[in-house]
Image 1 (cartoon, rainbow, N blue to C red):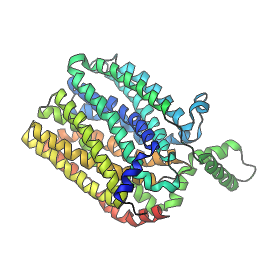
Image 2: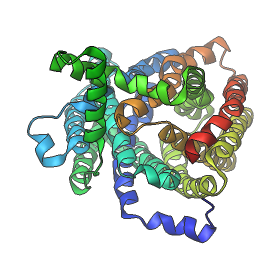
Image 3: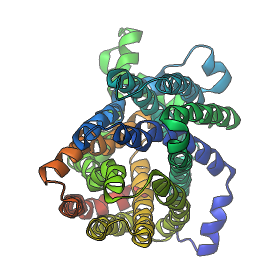
Image 4: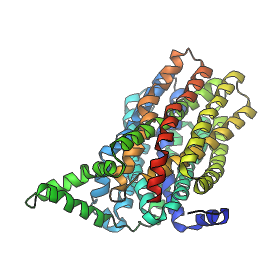
Length: 445
């Protein structure tokens, strides 16, 4: 379907996109609590670069959340399901866990009780990773299979929501950290969790034919096992096995494995950079207030602008081209950080770097999220998207946990570190060329 620019911009008036935005805010916010805020607090508490990097291992929950994603697809939570529906009930449930853990962190001191702080942060990570399963499924379920042309717009609103939930609270945290202390910051963050709970109550549960599709899958599995098969055994196989079988049935083994490897590698360079960015800013010589203003507030504004622009371009020219352009630009933007490492704490260069980095990140993320959505089936949207997203998060967790150790191994040579992260995207771009024809085929089918 060929879209003109007028039709493209008019498509953003769909009310469902606002719901996707609100859920995106809820998805992005926990990364502030256990990501940039925690990195800033640990750095101020005197922990080493390697220790801060390894602390990020708690993000491993996002890597393995596909293991319990089938439960989010199939288990109906008592009391909550009848009032909120399948997706919103799980979102609310996880948000109350995040609220409790945030209040707990507000009472700790990581320089004295690092184990307790880490445990509470891990609780947020697990709850947030579970929330992401439901939020992503909410977005996919909000649009029918015949509305594939709206996936880039939905992805854009999800990304804008994510960065709003991540950047604005992060900005408030960093500009107030020196004045009220990090404990006070986390107490304020608990109030934001309460606001996100209100958001969840305001949006509407998407209407889907998921139940019918899952019933068909149950009949198919029962046919394999025989008519005398036990109900629980059928339920278990449909819940745990069928989502993964369905993914490879639709794509084939060769294409399916290539997709999984591409998803794992595409953002690895960005993940290495992101894990160490706050530490880098501080070591170069920027204050908490400067980091909050440039990295969070100004960065958020540019992210929104570039995300809308990037989604419109992806609607007009296609997701594969968007991934290729975004991947190359994303890798090249890391060189701006290498330049900053050479120049030092120059605010003009800091601003330029934030602009370039947010443009390339927003552009590539829109294409990436749209790509994952197109690869997801409707019967088990939570499980299949979680599988793909968790692989993408794996590079942020399993691999990027060694980012601090890499900087130490390079004797603090930030310039060389950023050059290495630039080269990390090359293998995924080669695979993307191979996947292009298959992707075009499934989007036209």
